[in-house]
Image 1 (cartoon, one colour):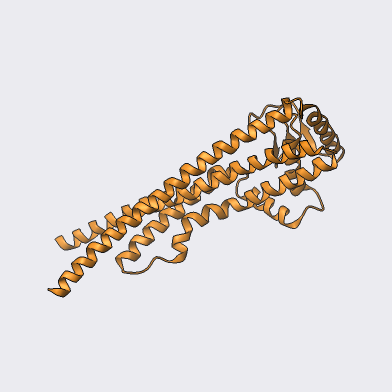
Image 2: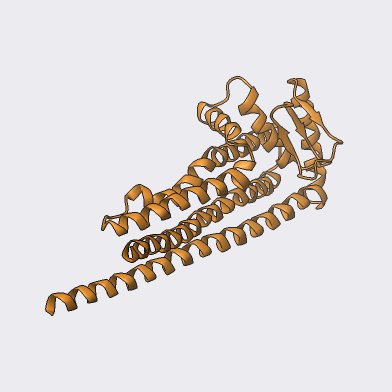
Length: 270
């Protein structure tokens, strides 16, 4: 009787622990998704505000326009193709395949310098090895899509595999591996790391271009805030993607547990 009661107690405790762990994983996933999307919205709004200031605030607009023209001319002298009229509806961007910078009607010196920074690492000689390698990885992981599509998809599948594996290991009274625990979060971050490093490197190069072009301390400070919030939108997205991985793991774990129970019932009924 003592052994039986001990087994029953252990079984109940295990079920309670599992439920508690499921709840914790779900809350963590939801927290990361909600927090990540919230921070993305925050940084996006701040980026738009600082960009608008650089183009319309009398304190910065005149200088920003002058610096932008100077950057454009220097870039054209180096053979960089710049499209000033086509509307991308995505803001200034560098198109890798076309080797062209699209301004999308912007006179924002910070954004232009950032896109020229991307072009520097993709095409120009003398670019730093880390920045160049990161940009090469960025290209092969889908560019900007690595943050918005590739990373969350990889998080979903990594979480799904991890959840199923955890359920099966528990059934065999085995511990979940460290790799299995880390996969839902680590996988989307690994996919997006080249992009994050590339964005940071492009901004750093852009700030150097602005200094070289003669931007004032006030404009440099405003530009640094602009590019900092632009980077923040990507970082926040990747926090949300990690949350997607945890939610997928939690869902897959529960489904696999049900599947295992159904398999047991079928065996018992035979």
